[in-house]
Length: 150
Ligand code: CMP
Image 1 (cartoon, rainbow, N blue to C red):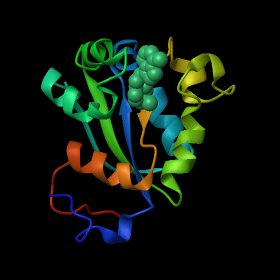
Image 2 (image 1 turned 120 degrees about the vertical axis):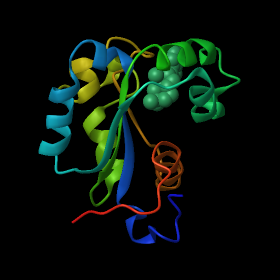
Image 3 (image 1 turned 90 degrees about the horizontal axis):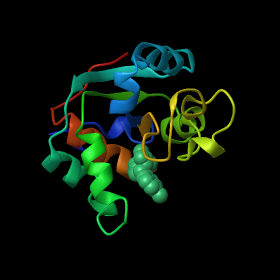
Image 4 (image 1 turned 90 degrees about the vertical axis):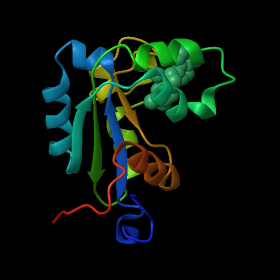
């Protein structure tokens, strides 16, 4: 398991990124990954996969009472995604600045969502919202013992 004990030295330095089905389908993955690397993030784990409805349900459980939940689950399990663990000082905060506001209409010019998102739901990319959630989400997608990185 990706445990805090074994990876304590990464706390505060990692975040989970998901390039969502809309962006993968449109062929934006490499451009998005390039922007992430250019912004100084180190990719310490990465995989292309499809989320089952069950996994999407578990991952987004905190939103289960929201009106958009069913649609979100449908969308996130509709095609391939690319999930990755990104390492950098202040990873969570800096990554949220890089991706921009959840709603692309409000995303600052040049941010990933400003460039590649089409709607509030199909917003191209996910980034963890706190260091605690980053650990939880990284563990969800990459349940392995320990990461090797420089
Ligand atoms: P993210 O912040 O990555 O994770 C939760 C997702 O729910 C969010 O991106 C959007 O894709 C989606 N979402 C949030 N608010 C709404 C909304 N009001 N309507 C539809 N989808 C939403």
